[in-house]
Image (cartoon, rainbow, N blue to C red; front, side, top):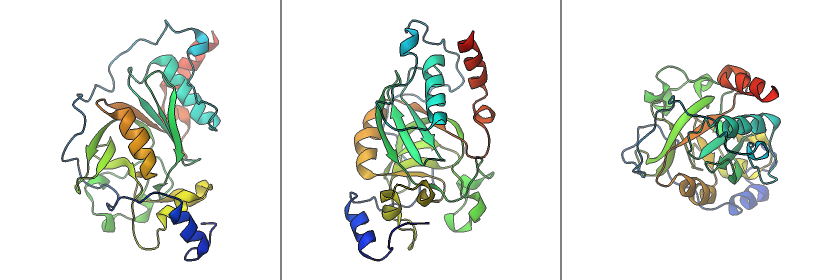
Length: 250
């Protein structure tokens, strides 16, 4: 529930506190152009853990940013295992409705609250990426959990996005207007994660954050996006994390 007076002074102040939003709706079509010249890497290619790093450095650096234990656990595993293949990576914590963007070494570039899919769940319905927004049932408006190879591109309105899942049309992009009554700017301005469930599955972030953090970090390169589960366990979605932590204890 939004904890502000929608339509009143509270909403006006919330809207004024955020930059102008993009005019596009949630991305629902495949990218027409690609802003990066880097080839999309093989997400399953083998890579060696960064054994040359001292053990103290083999954790993600959140720079004193508040983060859940689950977000830290996955980010530390990424750094220790080298699962990001030497590319920048993003941790999206759906329970906390928070996005963390890291450089290839695991140092935080920026963090923000974000808007996520209306429906609770960790899977996407088959074929949902090809459906019109108006035809998608409410229970299928999920932001899927998992590991995704992401790159900068553009949607069918030529608006820049970070494509998270090409086939499912899931992207991370600037906050958009959405449907009348969504009040996305007002929702983004609150601190409550409960207010952030409003999109059709894409991840909406503040305009300045997308331009200054996401586009800068992914300029000329692909990267990995890790979306944490809210129904399944971390081990269900990232099974390699169990073996990594067992090795750390030895």
